[in-house]
Amino acid sequence: MAPNMVSRRIGVVGYGCLGQSLVSNLLTQGPELGLELVFVWNRDPGRMAGHVPPALELPSLAALEERHPDLVVEVAHPKIIQDWGPQILRHANLLVGSPSALADQATEQQLLEASRRWEHAVFVARGALWGCEDIMRLDAGGGLQSLRVTMATHPDAFRLEGPLAAAQAAGPRTVLYEGPVRGLCPFAPRNSNTMAAAALAAPSLGFDGVTGVLVADLSLDDRHVVDVELRGPPGPTGRRFAVHTRRENPAEPGAVTGSATIAAFWRSLRGCSQLPSRPGIHLC
Ligand SMILES: NC(=O)c1ccc[n+]([C@@H]2O[C@H](COP(=O)([O-])OP(=O)(O)OC[C@H]3O[C@@H](n4cnc5c(N)ncnc54)[C@H](O)[C@@H]3O)[C@@H](O)[C@H]2O)c1
Image (cartoon, rainbow, N blue to C red):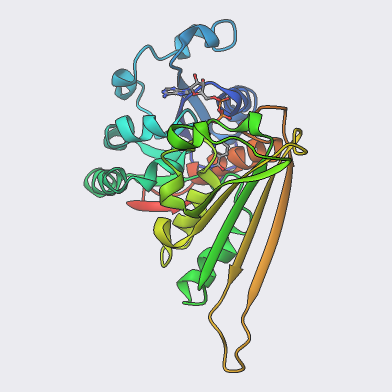
């Protein structure tokens, strides 16, 4: 372990695509990085059998305190953040992998209150959001007027609920939703996380001011495409600052998470494990 590194005890909640990758990295690279895996919890414990050392399996989230984690990483579902986020913050910093949970104002408020009360940080993984720091800086400087995040992929990669679940792709490329990110998150909780991260990166616009667009595209069966378009206010000449990035991320057919995003999560985990327990919500 590098001399300037602090050793940390890490718990992982969720053992799907992201959870398996993070657990594997923690078991193989963790010791040299000062990161000790102290538990893994999954809704279906059978999935961990033969992969996670039995001593590391956590039977119930109610028992996480006994493992004394410094950081708990959520890579399961936004519902876990809503149901368990404040309780986790009582004992540890929290890395949120499903920030669409924060579109619910009560959840955001409860996390902030618990964070302040127990002096633990709420870290939010930037996931598939490219240019996160640039957006934050522009927003903080008052230079952001509009932000639009479009997520396009094959319909098999969507896990939609409510009215969106019934929405049919009408052709090769169909816009399923276009509007405030807050309105999309409850119905696409697992496909709106990049947009939710953008809403957190740009608090002047937030979940109500950032536009999210969800597109079903039959040609995108092996990748997720995220377009981020932002504009500043008109300058003295009437012209505006504008940026458009396009991120094409290879993904297994039907997967919620693309391969580059898995690597981004590992970087977020490593990065935030070295940060202090600062109350509040911080993208990492
Ligand atoms: N921030 C981002 O940009 C970004 C990118 C990709 C994925 N994510 C999110 O990270 C999370 C994990 O992604 P993944 O690719 O590993 O998904 P996955 O489907 O491969 O695995 C999810 C895991 O969580 C469990 N799970 C699902 N619903 C649950 C519930 N209601 N309660 C408890 N456990 C539940 C599943 O059993 C599974 O073990 C998802 O919420 C996903 O939307 C965020």
